[in-house]
Image (cartoon, rainbow, N blue to C red; front, side, top):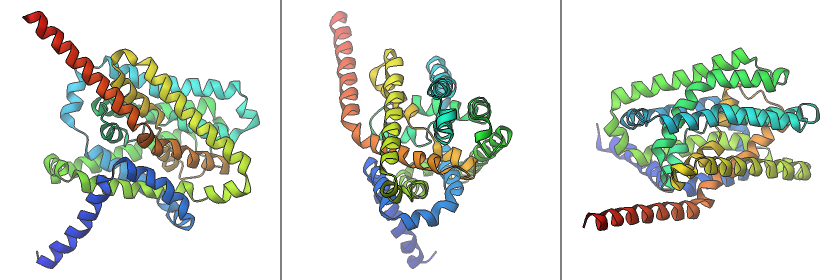
Length: 339
């Protein structure tokens, strides 16, 4: 391979590594860029399904098999967290929507909220937890188990709570989700076999950078009409934004409180994971055939999802520091008792 070709490859790899090093700042910047260049969002919208597939491939490719096996030996917390995010959250969301009579008052908003509720956590959740210093292993395990259930739970809850509001039948939704998840898992397994886990680990920063760039395709696509919609319908957009932040905070706080006994850092990691639903997967599964209000809600839901790691970073640092002090105190007490 010529020196010129090697240099040509090295330059973009360094660029991707630089983007990957920006961490939560780069993720927050996606929101700003998505708003700033609406025409680019329109151009990228046809490629949302491919982008989500690529993101899933990257996430599955980076799964630590040893961590998965280790956590399977102590499955109680993982099973409880999986039941909460994959079963309880959709049921409670559906009951709340029907109590508010959204099926009559705002069926498009009902569709948006239910697709959000039935979605699995974002594939980037473990990486975001790790960037904040939280327990990424527990998040990873719950992500894997809950994602495996999605082809079965999502169609079921969609049929029960949404019904005819979806253009895609529950069976077709389940088959599409199975194809996307199964296909991305197969591609990831082939890449891991050809490249090797060690090489993937060594190239962490360039892969992070590629992940962020691909994620921009989804963010730009769903945010392409936000600015024009704010100008045309300011009250609706304010209400949808307030609802998106409220849903995010409720899921975050309730989950963290529910699992507080396993430790504040692990509980916060689960809270962050449950509040970050993979709506991109649902957009891909429905081929983007969603009503206008549903699209707008999805777009506005990206704000709390991508800004949260930056906004919650100080809280996470305090929680992790408190946990470290607690461990040190326990070790000190044991050491004193031993004397």
